[in-house]
Length: 210
Image (cartoon, rainbow, N blue to C red; front, side):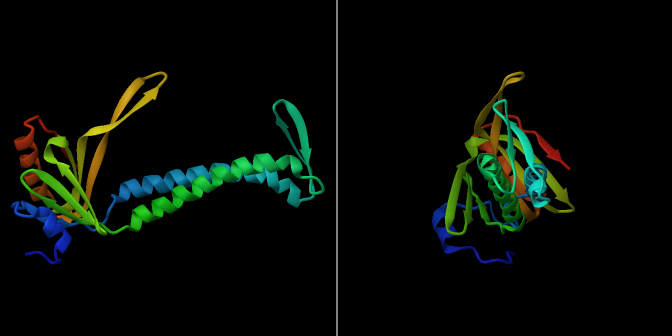
């Protein structure tokens, strides 16, 4: 028995189709992904703070700052800090990016989840008035389960994605991922999803359980 009310908008999207399951996730992103983003932001901003300390720190002590730009030695002081304007703007831009990454990580950590419905032909996500529909044929069948007892997270790999090029290792395809995070009966939901994926595209699936 569900302990939540299914939104009318989701019911309308499901329509006359039968639903294998309708669940509500606690979070929109896995905590591991949020912590990884926050870790990146912390490292990014820590590195930038070193540049700010080296550039601006001496000025607060009344000392001069000596640096090179395009092979030309330059000096800045409290009386004439014009030479620091361009470097400060560049580092300031990177600082704004670092702050954005940090804020995004916080949002990922505390953002509430949405509703998921599985039908014979598709997976439907409904959150904050927005509906995302993914046909089961778009799933590769590779599923990861991160569980504790009967609760946990599901991670589904899709056939769509992006190709990242690297000089030494060549092109690498990174598939899109769908996360269903913070749900109960995680193994039962995985079995139902896996069944539909096989029915729509009978390719071998790999299931990893942590």
